[in-house]
Length: 177
Image 1 (spheres, rainbow, N blue to C red):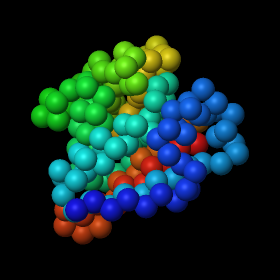
Image 2 (cartoon, rainbow, N blue to C red; image 1 turned 90 degrees about the vertical axis):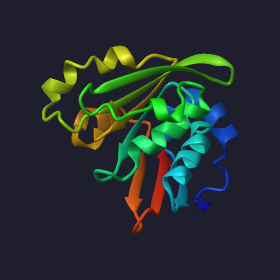
Image 3 (tube, rainbow, N blue to C red; image 1 turned 135 degrees about the vertical axis):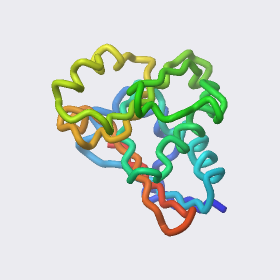
Image 4 (cartoon, rainbow, N blue to C red; image 1 turned 60 degrees about the vertical axis):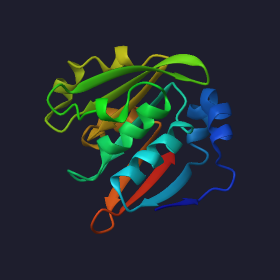
């Protein structure tokens, strides 16, 4: 079972796509928020599929949540919706730090980059990843544990927060700046 609550009635996937070039200018004016609830990992994947429509490149999003909250499970749905990978091909980049997939958004080629910064401890370690080079006009960058780094929080276009609601239930809140 999934439940969707849109906190901003004007926030639609079509508005998000149309607003992509002006995201930076609009960020200071108003954030848009979507809330979802799910009771299973399959529901989390399905929510990820829906979220893909809200995330046109270029975009950098922080994925927040405790260990095991479902951040990678959500990325499975996003990757599937973009034609970048099958759900079972998406794994956590905990040890490799970055997984890159090729997909499409609105029929245009794009890159999906999934980063996991859990093991990094300093901005200096982060610099060695080459995040500036990853941030291209065709890239959707999803960063687990990005909130640990001031530089990522400054450049993020929003965040996706996943919290446990007990058992397999999850609350997913998406905020686009």
